[in-house]
Every structure is written in structure tokens, then in C-alpha cells.
Image (cartoon, rainbow, N blue to C red; front, top):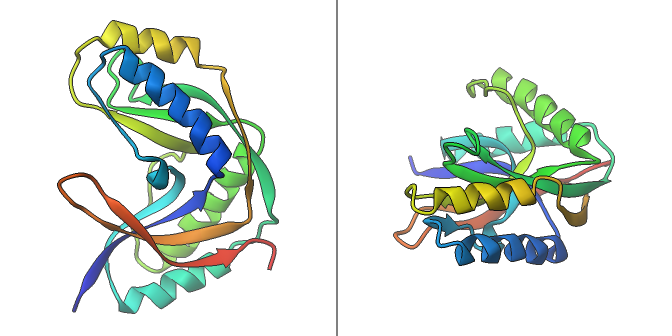
Length: 186
């Protein structure tokens, strides 16, 4: 049986993505060794599902439909790194107002998907990945950029649906496409 690498996400507006790209340009200008996330791949990941078979698609869509949330505005704000700014591996921008609603959606999905046998995740933090650090080159400059942007605002975006995505891994990076979506407030 064929499998797809899949995850659930929230889309963000083009305007927010363009502002995030300004941060990416600042990071690139520092000479830090960071592989940036393409504009088309920016989103808030709610749950990574891994490789699932096609029979699971309908069950996951059902779990998405069980989420109870109205549409809302999400403020995209701040910059940071996982696991931390001293040893950055993943660079992100975070969530301000509306972040609690994103966390609530993720919690509901977690509960529904656990019933289907998907493993429970560790602590959820709403964020948009903007880059992956490849080496420690110019780490001090990168840390300075993250510090300067820790309270930066990248605007607000309407969140009105949960998107079921598949990921095709290629040598030049992942290519994401939509499997389906569920509107919030339905």
C-alpha cells in the first residue's frame, strides 16, 4: 500500500510571509549558515503525522472535522530558535494574540489523533519555521538578529481552516501540496 508523508497545518497570509522574508534576508546578510524556508512552505504546523497509508486519510480528515473553533486572527510576532538561541537548530517566528487558539486547535487534534493511534507529541508551541541552521558559522551575528527581533511584529493573518498537507522530500527541499482542508466554525 502506498504511503504519503503528511502533516496538519494552518496557512498564513502572503503579507505575513513577505514580512518574514525580510527577517530571512537579515539573517542571510549576517553570513550565518542557514537554509531558509521558501515562502510557499511557510505555515504553522499543528501535527506531523509521518508516513501514513491512504486508508488513514479519511480518518484524519474526520479528526480535523471534530475540532471546535471559530475563525480568528493570529498575530505573528517574535523570533527565536529551537532548542535555544545559544545552540540554534531551527529558527522560527512565534504567535502573539490568537496563539492560545492555535494551541487549543492543536490540543483538540492531538486528542482525536491519539484515538486513531498516532503518537502523542511533546509540548506544542505555535510557530512558523523560517530556517534551519546548518553550522555554527557567524553564530554570534545570528544570535544578535534573533535578540533584536524577539518582539518584532510580522502582522496578523486570518486563520479559517485546518489544512491536511503532504510533503514530498527532494534534494532541493520539501514540496508541500494540499490533500484537503476543513473550515473552522462549520
